[in-house]
Image 1 (cartoon, rainbow, N blue to C red):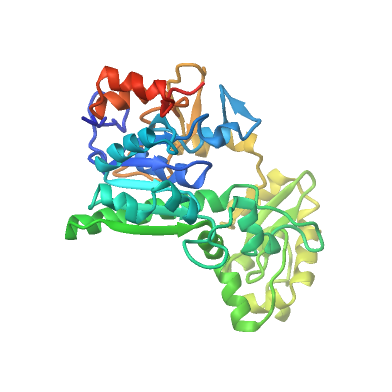
Image 2 (cartoon, rainbow, N blue to C red; image 1 turned 90 degrees about the horizontal axis):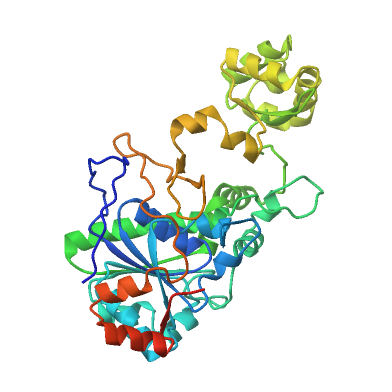
Length: 413
């Protein structure tokens, strides 16, 4: 039957038991949020089968940039999985999915509620195949409410939940956060809840129904803005690089760039004034406390800018480091890929890819007992493992040929 593979996190011959190495996951999701959830579980050792529609996950086409045949968005969320292509609109395709689901511990789907019900992958339908399964439903707006069956993508949810309204420069055009924080955040919450549900199932022996949504994640990311509005009635707006509740806390210009400075308390502020030679500024009653500094932010920013704009980025960083002031240059993606601190952290892992020389990806951002989870498989090609999975599910050669002949299963392009 379904044969799990046991990843070795350390990349050595000494196999390390992974937290989820006895967990089997059926991933019926596309785009980013659901796939990222399943990738987290795969990184933690779970055996993950990615069920793709005819033609493959649409996220494969979200480029350029492409690396090999797939978009880098797809590659960022699908390592560690095996792929089978099923046409779930055919009975034979659903029969295969039911057999996968019956042998799974976790089932993840990201269709709109009505679409999930129509396909038969909603929680009640899947539980009929496997009473003890942990079922996760990811959606845009949630499983209930007047917008529950509307589609949603990361930038739409940033717009809907107010993230864009507090991002960018004052008086500037609407600005999306540069990373897919809603998609990846939703995947993260989904994985966390699945792991919690598996603990609950261990305790009770019963399956668990889980839900999360892009809207929920979006609201969580601006929770302090929401609470600030509820407390004061004041509507927050975009502030560029600054934070409304703390000052000085923003990017300041230098002779050759910008440096982000976070003077989060009175002691740091005093050290910043000393580092910049701002005699008497720390004792100015306008700046005596954080609340005072926030109230007189414009005056304070002008004083600090007057000092930072006269020195180079390197000189400013040397001063802030010497005086224990939290600060960072505004780095580009090219800078951070070659950054020595990131290299020491092991966040970029080189993975043996059969078609892409020098293939690297970004590791799971955690360590367990000092070991960072390693990729077990590169992202699969569409339907790469269709035949392998069917054989593991117990289909004989004649049955496999029939499934391919009728188009219920395919190997992709």
